[in-house]
Image (cartoon, rainbow, N blue to C red; front, side):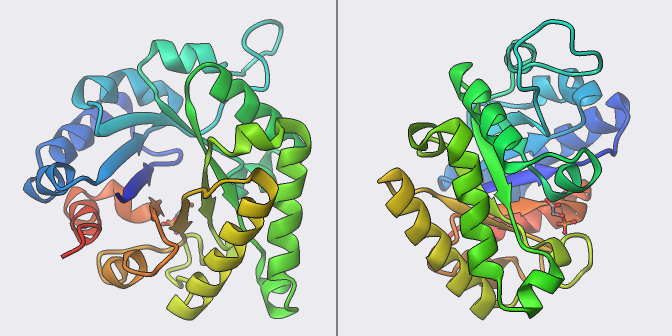
Length: 250
Ligand code: PGA
């Protein structure tokens, strides 16, 4: 069963978000794929969660793009996992590379957030990925394993075992240049192996980074790819619908 996650990032006012969610939820390609077993998660900004919630369901779920390390208290500007649950979220994206870059999130912080999110019943979608320099200097495997180990150091292996991991090469995000199928296949194989050794279970790994309707079928049919985390292309209903449709194995 594939999982396709729409990361709307810092886009949409509540009215736009409601409109987009309504169009996606009634899109024929999406409803066909949902009936075939695909699960979809819409992750609007915090301020649009309430507007998207009425258009979601068990298979077309609501997710947030981040949550705090703490549930409540004196943490100005933060949003805790219980607040997301109260709005209908069942998933939360954690450790996206844009947050690692702009909010200085470390693997250890991401691990704490994953633990907190899971305690409240949210399924964390934990992002990992290497920079272009790390890829070019053949350090991809080492960097990804270190990210996983850093997260586990604060979440514990039993927490990560219940998460979904998203492999997003930083150089492929928003660049229009997705990783090649060879790169995706070999990297997913190593991530799944390392997660298996670390957590003792098979963990689903999504691919993210310039997924479009043009490359979705090829990427989603690779062994070891359990779905996609889609940024830019998730803001256009037809384009996103085509990506969701590509998840159906024929
Ligand atoms: P993109 O973003 O699909 O626009 O490359 C993916 C992501 O950042 O999750």
